[in-house]
Length: 527
Image (cartoon, rainbow, N blue to C red; front, side, top):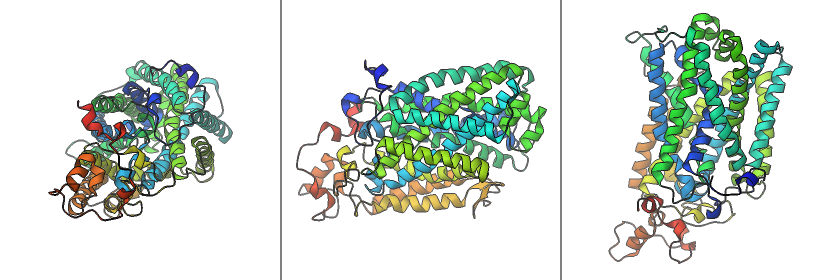
């Protein structure tokens, strides 16, 4: 951050909701976006995802390739989602109103809400288990429901406090978390190097039945981590000035995901050690317990520190966006702070009920994967819309729903754009049908590819084809493409077919020259 008031600002509660962030408050840089993304993933939760190739029976080398493939593909899909915040000065759910309608944008809010609660819960559970387990080995702390509950409650309350203070306090926390957690993970190299065998063979080798199912499944699990950030990037990137070159923003997103290979590979390497020294934990899908069982005694304290730091950073990046989204859905009832408190209390209640009363830990893990399957087509349609519109958006018209108004460029059919919804609904449903998580959830079409989970490729491809087809067969109004296209539309020899209907949503727009906020972002940054 480059303003002189940051030290004071982190002690003030953020009052901004989803309304457009004023230019003078946009002092963040792509480097700050990198910290928030990497800090939110540099945790035990990501290390657990890194253990999946071993749980699926792959060798260490095959696991490395699967993780690298999944992370890189996911990062490339994720990168353009970081552009909407600087363009529109608001979060991605509100920005999605340009493609789903100002009412249809609640799809993005709902998806981000479910994703945030799921990943927040998983983060608190994994970090709490690691903290209590490490303390048990370090000082003999009993591992009971009481100690686990205290650990969960501590994490949840700390996270809620940071989220209430807002973006700049969260950024300060992640500045510390990025370096501290990375150093602790790297310290694990010295802790586990003597027992590590890079030639770990696994139980399924290339050429054997089930290898490709395990490989693709592992890659998709790794890919789900960057995809899970899609709905939240605008929460943070909206503080980046709109003049920032778009390539710098996308590069920060990609580099942050590449950096997550640290916890991913830590999880993979240590899982191979657990598989050799404590195979019962692998059979029970209990990576954290197995890690504690094979850790040298001097590494228990770093394990506890990683749990605390990681739980804070992941929890804040999830819960902050949830409160922001809910304040946008109910703008007259909830401010950002009130929405954060409400969702925080609900999430804490869910954490305790899900862990102690209903044993939902495994179910929530499955639920998180299913939500990502639904989020992926929403993301790809946002990216297609960004390209088709050539980066032109009218930030003021995106706030119509928030202000309780009607009309504007993105009113479409009473606030709903059936082109976007008509592509997202079938794509998400078909994607769910192809999910194949053995022992957890197998969709009706999950076994069509010999047990390989192809849900993400299917939903990505279907959403792209259907959305582009609908845009071509049923063109959107010319005004959503910017002043240049509107001028051609109104010219005697207009290039677009079909007259503009009288009394359409754009008729409420004031006749004026476009403001700097309405100039296409992609055009401006290319100058």
